[in-house]
Amino acid sequence: MVFASSHRFPPALRLSCLALGLSLAAGQPVSAEPQRIAFSHKNFSDLRGILNVFDTFRTACLGQPVTQGLDERLLPEGYRIVSSSLHALGLETAAEPRTTVLSMTGDEEKDFAGGHPYVELGLPNDAAPNGACRVAWKRAWDYADGVGKIMTGMAVLFDPWLSFRLKAVRVSPPEDGFAVAERYDLVGEWAAPCFGGTWCRLQTLLILHREDGIHLTIKRGEPPSAPGGKN
Image (tube, rainbow, N blue to C red):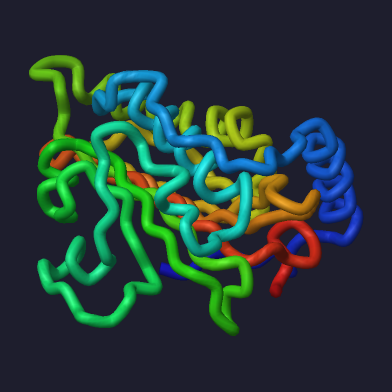
């Protein structure tokens, strides 16, 4: 999938978004000690689960860059820390992992089957000086009836709730229209205030499927020069 770039947007719009974001960021002091992740709601396959993912992403990915030991300080109650290779492939290597996962089960398929969100943290490198951070969640429907209405409601409310919860500004074009469907694939690129009083670019993917349930991923990019701008 290709994420849209803000080079299509006029300079005045970019500056307006930047001013809005900086004013929001100014009221968000960054704590010296990372906040431990806690889930405010049950991870049900509705807006409650989506809000948990938003809050988890804000705590893990926007509060600070990734550093050694951050995974231990963020670890939610009942979760464990595993390497990304063990989590995704079931294989462990002897080398010290540079990417770790905060996981309920220690296994991606089991996390998805149980409807547990997980956090993937990658230590900094040349391509990502602030490290990599991603939150993913997949869950089957918790409802026997009314799934269509729940899907439609989440598809409509996703953008405004993300904007409100993360103080984010959308920088990719919105959908041209909306029609009730059996499946929704919503892709977006955003900019949100993050650590150091700067911006972080966010990439979002929300899949709502009547048969398969909900799948949501949010990934943090490096702080761009302006909301949605190229690094």
